[in-house]
Length: 295
Image (cartoon, rainbow, N blue to C red):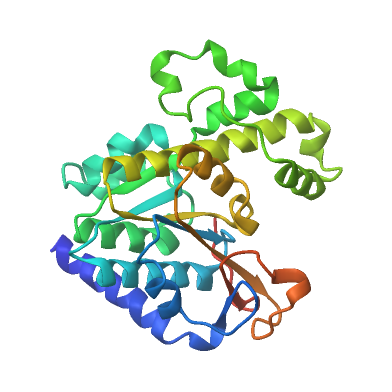
């Protein structure tokens, strides 16, 4: 019965996507018209594709699902595809694995894994497809309690963690943010209340986030040689090939990367080069008038 329900869910998402081509446009990073198929077909020589999202973008989540689905269909069985997600923290990997293997119920999985509020509507379809196809799903994010430690007390706050706790993070000391990323981050934070708490520590906590996601992706590729990782994260982490991408290339210098940046805008049919050029190898613009996902 559960398998039937899963197949119904996946079919419903696929149908929803097929009915919404007028809600998004796909472009290359230089603004040339493109397509989901072109994105997927270009992944043959790639190690990881980073899908950068706005977390409440319902159309964007449908696009992510379709990229993942097509990547799985195109690569099976000759190449393994892994789903990696910012939306789960590394210390719940064992719980995620137990669920994927059918050892625990979905109810217990959700009770124990701290899913985001929009998990069922936006991320569950991808996880269920991975489960159905017996694919790995990576809980890529640093545990928030440790990110918070850094934002309050700086990098040195992590020194007091146990060996077991440090295993859930990128190897310490993790790299500093690049100058370009740092400048972009500081500009985004501006004079916000968070920034007033100490922008240097907050940037360091952001880098812990980026580095841990990058490290878990690199570790997955080392474990599954020749595989393709499809990684989901907030767009800021990877747009312009900064942040998580920069850290990934420190862990895997010869890594082959694609970045897809997905964002909702008022005029999703027009590529404004001043705003969107080189935000990714591909840029997907979705209709800002569509209802938002509830987090």
